[in-house]
Amino acid sequence: MSAANPSVTRVVLADDERMVRTALRVILDAEPDLEVVGEAATGAEAVSVVRAERPDVVLMDVRMPEIDGIRATEQILGGMAEPPRIVVVTTFENDSYVYDALRVGAAGFLLKRAAAEELVGAVRLVARSDSLLYPAAVRGLAAEHARRAPAAAPWVARLTEREAEVLRHVATGLTNAEIAERIGVGPATVKSHVAAVLAKLGARDRTQAVILAYESGFVRT
Amino acid sequence: MSAANPSVTRVVLADDERMVRTALRVILDAEPDLEVVGEAATGAEAVSVVRAERPDVVLMDVRMPEIDGIRATEQILGGMAEPPRIVVVTTFENDSYVYDALRVGAAGFLLKRAAAEELVGAVRLVARSDSLLYPAAVRGLAAEHARRAPAAAPWVARLTEREAEVLRHVATGLTNAEIAERIGVGPATVKSHVAAVLAKLGARDRTQAVILAYESGFVRT
DNA sequence: AACCGTCTCCGCCGCGCGGGGGAGAGGCCC
DNA sequence: GGGCCTCTCCCCCGCGCGGCGGAGACGGTT
Image (cartoon, rainbow over all chains, first blue to last red):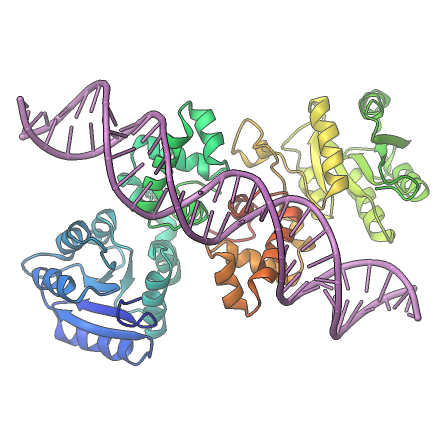
């Protein structure tokens, strides 16, 4: 996970409430494989701390002074060569800011009332795999909200028309060559689109992309 | 395939309409590797004919006098040591009986308006592998056939414990190596299990397997 | 006119994956 | 005791895939 010690996941906490930061730190530091390497009380501070520490995961509050969590997320993801996974932390599950954060590339979100094990598990999940927390977290913490929230996955907005089309074909089990034939472009082009989709979804391979497509409701069962 | 001649697939036809049986017979007998060894006009007749002929594959109409195709399927699968693969044949793709048939263990179903090549291919497929037939049209997915689109829920029963476990992990986006680590076996073993799962599901690769897992409800969104 | 996003396509490279074999151990059933 | 299934693991091989870097064309924005 980290350059210094691959077996330890390095975490930065960004929240304007000291109490929250402390609580998170206590929980995370109790785990041998997790290490809190920095804290920030504002969005701007979060950006600089992250740049300095280069953590694996950032727990980011949405509502913070100066620069909010969304802007901070944007700046971190946009300005770093190898940005960390950013998990948005919020109090209210229907916080509209959350979706903004996800739209700019956050890896998922967590509720502040989440149990310690959930928190720990979530950090490990985003650090280890490339999966997004969004669907699982929503299902686990506020299932009813997830159900009545039909909205397409946040990352869909970031996919171009072509990329979305390609993803739909990927999600029916076609190979790149088959997709190319079907949409009338070259195989290399499909490769490019698939690569773009994987990058935007944070998926490692097409299989994970398909999973995310289902979990997010991009394709319906 | 058959005890007498391994290279020939022996088929029994069960349909109350003579026309249908004849049509099927003509199509199948035209293939050198397929042989129609019996016909039945009722469910009860189907059971006895199958017991006597011990075919590799049965093409079974759902709607038949005396005993319907579901009951007949149930009796055949439940009462024989080495039951044949039973493919349910129906006119309407949204026939609710079809799902009942699949639930009691039918290997899949075919539409009566299927092309001859589809019919022949389907018989060969079920005879050869543990694969199941399941038209994509029913899932409302693709109007066109998603090449080999198998599997409803019933195939889950045919997966061993280990295979099901592996599939669950595949459906979370893990690589073979990761699955191996997680369940505590060697990578080669996982490969074997994955290969078995793919064969039984009729999937070409893990991506298609994941799609089938979602579509069939094996994993829930 | 300069810029940027999108779509198109080209290499090269490493590797995970799937196909096709096989083989041994343990358990269950007849 | 002999089948049969399940689970375990091995080999070799080909290839689709994903990462990487680049490039040209078009259209809209500024």
